[in-house]
Amino acid sequence: MAGPEWRNPGGGLWGGYAIGLAIRAVEAEPESVGEPLSLTLTYAAALPSGSLEVRTRRLRQGGSVGVWEVEILPAGSDLVGVHAMVTMARRPNTPKFAFAKMPDAPPPEAMPSPDPPAGALHFGAAAFEQRTLEAFPPKPTGDSRSLAWVRSRRGPLDKVLLGMMTDHSAPRAMYALGRAVMTTTLSLTAYLHATEREIEEVGDDFILVECEGRVGGHGASDERSSYWRRDGKLLATSEQLAWYREVRPNPTE
Picture 1 (cartoon, rainbow, N blue to C red):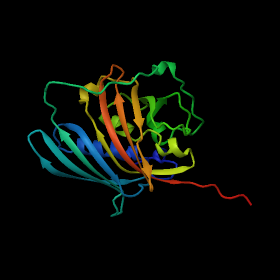
Picture 2 (cartoon, rainbow, N blue to C red):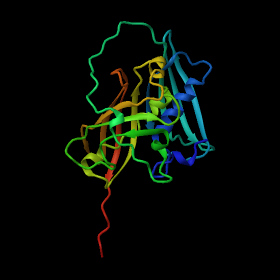
Picture 3 (cartoon, rainbow, N blue to C red):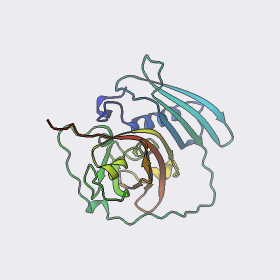
Picture 4 (cartoon, one colour):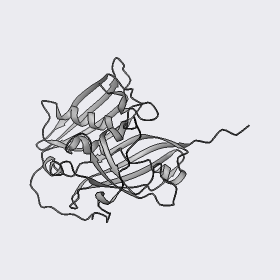
């Protein structure tokens, strides 16, 4: 049952809710082995709040890696709203290496945390507190890169909440066109690099979200994000493709 607080401004469910639901559904399967490693979602249609049906199917199970298919539908409907492919894996002990480096950012304690107006804790804000020096909606500056400290309002961070966080940043089209734009996610892929234990070590602390867009045109725009633990550990990365259109004001009479 998806409550109305998870609806986005367009009326359908926030995309991050479907991400968390897909992860939780596969984790709950008795035949599921390991922990979520990656997932790719296609948003075929908006999901309404209320009762939902979740269908899962194991496509393959190897010695270490399993692949699952998830379909999320409105209850009583045959029309799939969100389709997900989830990779589960046993995480072996292998030599570690890292090429990526956490960007410099002021600590979250030095950033403002404005109180939202009454009733404003909806969709992503219902799950996460965000601290950033940027205003919302963002203003076009010629640069799409943003940094924000984010932490869970729903208890200690886990893979479900980390997955949901990958659909929490402002659309990059806003950084080019301002607030006069409507966007919706077409597809999103998240890579959960950290193990469950490495994510549990975050607890209730903030993580740093680095997000940027590269290009937009003919209705489609992209963005990519990285999710850093305070000590510099890269927890996850994501890639997203969004559909957008410019909203032109009505001419004055």
